[in-house]
Amino acid sequence: MRHYTLILLLFAGCTSLSAQNYTMKMDKKDGQTVETQADDIKEVLFKNGDIRIKGKNGTQTDYEKGEIRKIYFTLSDNQQKAIRLLPPRSIKSPIAARLQLTLTNLETKQTYKTTAERIEDKVIVAETNVPNGRYSLAAIGTIDFEKRIWVKKQKKWNILEMKAQVKADKEIELSGNSSTETVSIPLKTYTDADGFLITEVFYASPPSREYDDQYIKIGNNTDSVKYADGLAIVESGFNTNDSTENDPQIMDEMMTIIWAYVIPGTGHDVPVQPGEELVIALNADNYKTKYGTFDLSHADFEFFDNTGMDTQNEDVPDLENWTDTNSGQTTLSTRGCKALGLVKIGVDRKTFKEYFYYTYSEKDISSGFVNPYVGGHIVPNAWAVDVVEIAARADRQWNVFDGELDSGFTYATEHHVGDDYGTAVVRRKVAGKWRDTNNSSKDFRHDAKPTMY
Image (cartoon, rainbow, N blue to C red; front, side):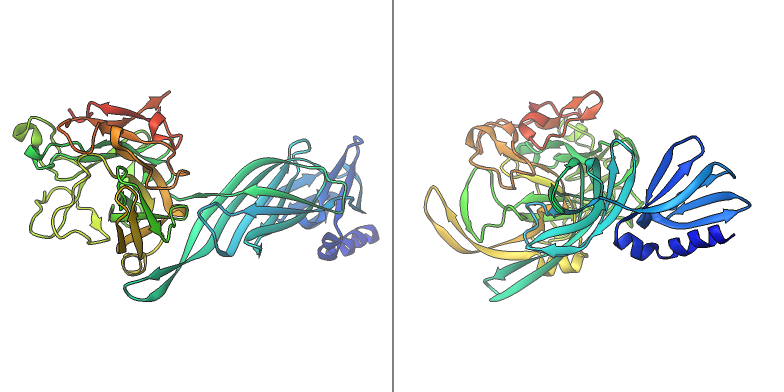
């Protein structure tokens, strides 16, 4: 009994032992030695010769009487490792971070956990004591960040405080010989809506049809049910056929948009099965009989502007207009000179409308004309779910959202003026999944036949 008392007294100091980097070792009867970092152990229990080891992560291992010959603690030779977690390019000013890190030794399968909350020179830092070796690192958590926006018309600064979800999965080698080793890991943003994609856009509807039969399809590209509640469709404020110089230029942090329409719901109201799509109609009506095109009367949602100029199908739910920028009826760019995006807005409707707006000067490159007061709503790139750059093929001048969101473009028209109407952009499928490389030049079939026929 004295032996067990000694072991328990030693283990009772595991907090201080862990700080000095101790390892608990158990020599088994078969000659094997089991090693566990002291900091990973919650408690050691003894009963009638049996031993139970409980881990802080909820694990439990039982050993029968006689299976363990000896338990002892040794000072490890592990080195202090500093892991630098680099915020995504779209997050310039992190102000707080809360990340959980799990490192799994690929040879021994031993798992080590630590947290990262300290920010140094805009980089998030975690420290851990682990043996040298190759590890699988998984990091997940949130970053709070801010953006200062000067609103010229109101002559004031808007300080936008936002939150982004971030993660990283990477294999790393820890093999330094110094007392401290540092590795850098880039983080990526994600949202709960990741896996949703814009799968089709029919926008090239001719003026003779008053653009009524335009529609967008949104698909679930995962293997599980996803909920589309709160997912917003946005259209760019800039035109892909007319490049400008803007001050301030914040494209690497923010999307400048002209409108945002949000799918209503409280979180689990709009389920989308794997591989299934939502149809979002400009106007949910039967245009098969009217124009010989599509029956959109059974769409899942429709755009509706309560301005007296828009029609409404009472049987189809309306999207929520979060910008109210149009005095008439919203339409998609009929010549394809705008980018579209899916985003998960991280603030409430009132906050978004009041604060996520800025003014900038705009210089038209071709004419040199400068408009000093142009206004637009903005959405952080960190909240992006999917982006599709759309252009008139022959007249495209630039991408209006950041290249990390979409490095290419797709098209259904040749010029930004003309009479080539009636086709769509349709996302390709490969092995049963929609293609998603963040390059719409490769991901879409251009000038394609609409699938609603």
